[in-house]
Length: 64
Picture 1 (cartoon, helix red, strand yellow):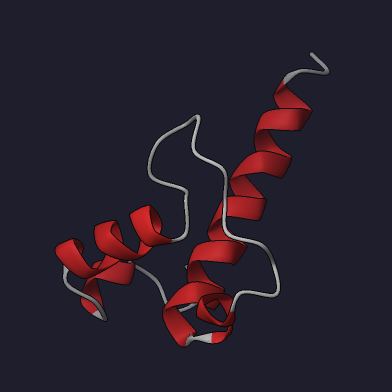
Picture 2 (cartoon, helix red, strand yellow; picture 1 turned 90 degrees about the horizontal axis):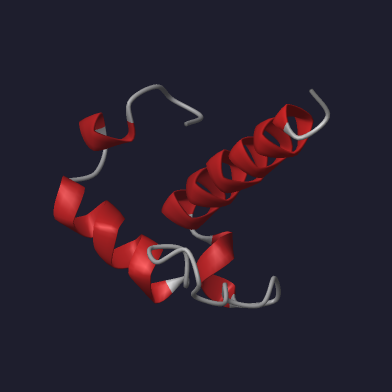
């Protein structure tokens, strides 16, 4: 995350709830659209950055 371990800034239950609300908790959930205002919060931005980074890393693993 942007500032290190996210649980230093947010309790775990807040992070889990945000992931669920944004549609990222379950693998087969559909994520919230990018124009959703929740992505503009500090927590939403950190979650999005981490999510995109992980997707990018996983896509690179497919190349091997």
